[in-house]
Length: 485
Ligand SMILES: Cc1cc2nc3c(=O)[nH]c(=O)nc-3n(C[C@H](O)[C@H](O)[C@H](O)COP(=O)(O)OP(=O)(O)OC[C@H]3O[C@@H](n4cnc5c(N)ncnc54)[C@H](O)[C@@H]3O)c2cc1C
Image 1: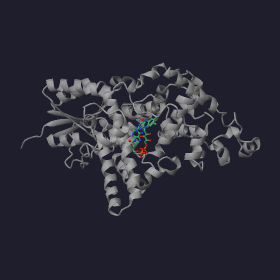
Image 2 (image 1 turned 135 degrees about the horizontal axis):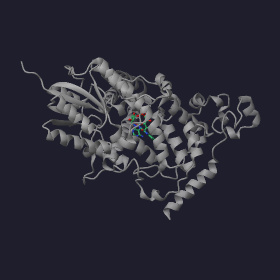
Image 3 (image 1 turned 90 degrees about the vertical axis):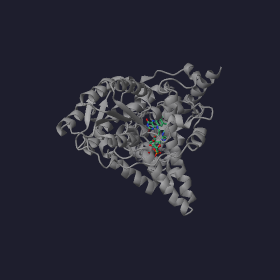
Image 4 (image 1 turned 120 degrees about the vertical axis):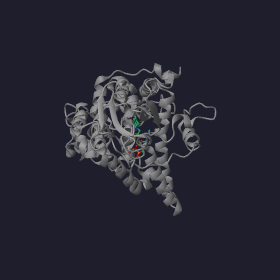
């Protein structure tokens, strides 16, 4: 009887068993040593933020269970650890799914060279994107910089995304790690914060591959039909909330894409054009994820540098007090405060709110988008280098395909339009619960009698507005106009 060779599957942002191309290939090759390495040193400034670390802790616990407590967990430089494990266990090959952060791309190349030089084979697959950046180039071989042509021609013009694969049937992890050791090693990564603010996140999430599948199923069967109509209204809960699962890889984009496509085909068969049209918008949002990753791959300076260089001369303001009030949801603009508190309390923020609070920070307060990006990075459970960087460059107007700078969201009108019943805002800003709808988004304009009847004392139990909306808008437009000179 021949013994199968030992191979390593190195997990990164693919923390699942189903539709994991590199894992499938590894199981076909031999007995699998499943490995996770926390490498903060190599990530540097881009090391996983606090809320995403909390997510990672629970993800690893869940993945470990899927491997009958045999997940090998290490902390340190992957460049040393992966080759060392391969040689210690005489591994024939190492398998991984590609990631697109510039630091990981560089590290992967180095590790591949080391392993190959030691006679260990390396297999890399695409497990994170519907189309990899090289598949969506223009006819002249250069990358798209504008979303619509990228999506229409680059994505839809390429071959359809591969169908998801089931989890490997014969998943026998190599028994090199004891159950106690594995659980202890996950705890020793110290991914949970010392002060346990993360407890408030717990009721909002169920972190496992199975939970991701259930969320996808519920979304496709109940919400996809009204996605386009409802996606901008935070109180309607019409969005999928799949982003943290997609980032950590408990769900693959192919699983999301195909589950939605199957449902769309049913609607096409019965001629439900309303549902088909609504669902089309979901595909284009997945397209934005692809676009962001393609931009990051082709423009590695995206997380730090303004893509439009004229913004290097923009007169950003240093205003620690304003930044602090924005971070804490104490700006005195109820819709902004609601968004920032949702982020703090749940680790997530609805997309409409990400745009409103982002515009407020970079335009009304003139605070550099880097500060917003960093706060999101630390607080979002779905913090993702590509999506977060593109999101902030879009909001600041300095990105490749960005909102024009002069489009400054008015937080009062945004609240009135997208949360007209006030349900979302009152939930996160309970101080204003009794304020009538008419003044909910502009309490500073409410007559004293209205404030008093609602139990609101501005400056005491709810802040005065941090800035004057009209004046700050004029100031932002003047700063922008100066760039053109
Ligand atoms: C300033 C700013 C920062 C952002 N930071 C992040 C981030 O760190 N991580 C992150 O995943 N998304 C980020 N986004 C994009 C978007 O807000 C979230 O992906 C979305 O709100 C997640 O909620 P959902 O899963 O319910 O989305 P749905 O509306 O259900 O969309 C489905 C999926 O499509 C993708 N998607 C949707 N909108 C976008 C978008 N604009 N850009 C890229 N992908 C998108 C996500 O993977 C999402 O899970 C940011 C947006 C802005 C404006």
